[in-house]
Length: 315
Image 1 (cartoon, one colour):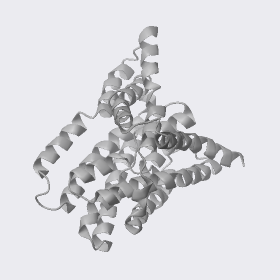
Image 2 (cartoon, one colour):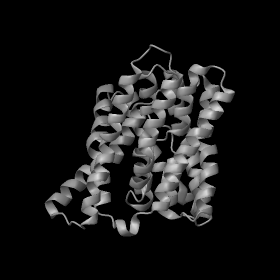
Image 3 (cartoon, one colour):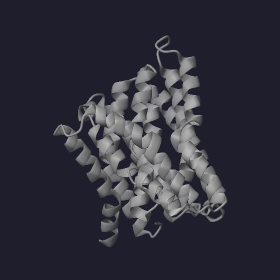
Image 4 (cartoon, one colour):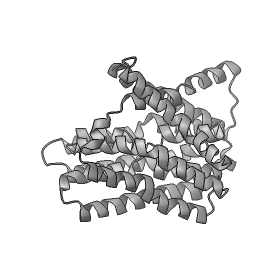
């Protein structure tokens, strides 16, 4: 019973805050404009400051693991490739493939990953290292599969590729991580005034992001094209973590490493996948449905997986 309570404590506060955001939107306390501004504030300011703070305060000689980074990198490549092959073989409507594949492999690793790690361990743990190894690949692979399945002539694909590659290099979260590395290597101690300011800004990221995610829900999208939506959701939340987490345990990953890998493989599909699919001439209805369904179902799957890992003393 204690392991079950531990699992609920690790996941339910996050989803309850998201539900609060959904309810506030339904009650018209939140507007679409507020949600859009909150998303930008989190992505461009609060979250980069948070990962900067955690990286700058880390002992990289102790915390950095090449084995862990390579596992994240190679794992991302593998489950993208296998999912795309599966989609090409079994999906008859080829216009769905881009949204299906992206929704099946691209999780909300940054925002929800840091939220879970903070909730369990009090810091972002190894999630920033996982972000460095995987988030650029998420963007690159998404562009490749979306362009492949998009209808010809609907968008300037060359411009989209350039813009996306530039977005990877200028990604605020990646910048926050990179800027934090020298401070960690040189073991810089910030003055109290600076330290408290950084902590105040960083503390905005998780609750504001979760409220904005909840406020942006559109449950009706999950009811359309429910078969491919359900298939992509099962791949994202059950099949991929069901294959890679036992492999990670076998390779000796534990505690913070395993939690970061759980988020990499089993987090719900990121909202940005819908934005990318829509802007690149792909199936936006399917993309939106996958985001909604994976977010709803992940409250059960993530709790269950954490319960299993805790019961076997892996975390």
